[in-house]
Length: 397
Image 1: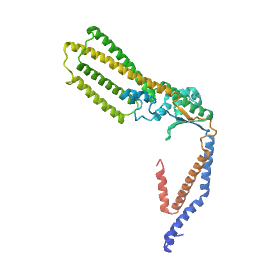
Image 2: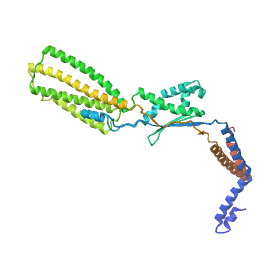
Image 3: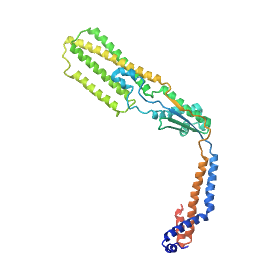
Image 4: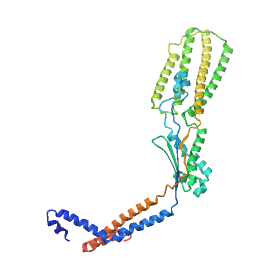
């Protein structure tokens, strides 16, 4: 049928032409109906045979509730310490989920699981590195929007997956016992170090006081000089408290945190005040006897300062120990992994359907190409173009 003549026959010739083109396409498909129905069936049959050869894979899932970083329960005790009391409840604490996921994915945990379950034999390799990679590929650890951490483990052994997923939680708990990862345990370690240093400084200042008293005896000074020394000692203690507070906050907040910036500004003001007291006109001129007495007072004030600092750090250390001891089961399991009843993969039905769909698309495309070739070979010019295309597609000319 001549398409040009059909388009000229009436005002709706354009629609007639489109209908003829669609009919031509349907004819091209109908001529090769065996190809269109046979190829998808053959591809689906091949995919089914391949999927039957694939082993069944099972999945075990454990969901756990990570420790929540919040205000310390010892805040009431620490509130007695004034400016240092807000160490335990510093704002802007970082979320712990990423930390715990990193611990679960660590090489230490992987090696312990490989040894515990003899995964080298399970994976058929003697290389520890290959066993780690296989275990990593079979494990998916993610934190959901609900704040829970899900541990998914895949394996061909359905009895192994549940035990392996639950073992991740046990290994995380073992790490929590030896690593300071919560704010309470980090504060405990920090204040333990600071307390040891303060204890050494206190012992040194007491020895210095004894030496000064043995050399010069006890000499009184005027009230103005005593007041200056006491003020300097008090400001120094406040500066030390703020410095320790900043050091503790660095473990939990960033430098852009509002509370961190506020403490920095307070520390700067205290340092400026101390500089004024030590170098300004407030320092009186002292005579020989008064100067000797003032030296003794300064030594005594150093001892008092070290004693006050030691007491503050001791209270902070005890508060952190209380918080750490109060949370023995930091990791709480919401859903423990159980032995799966059904396999998770491969989804053989889906694979066969997708393969059949791909086969149908390939068969349809091939039918159109063969029809185009057949039409082109009917004309001399088309045959020449087809021959040129074949020559262009050859790797060797």
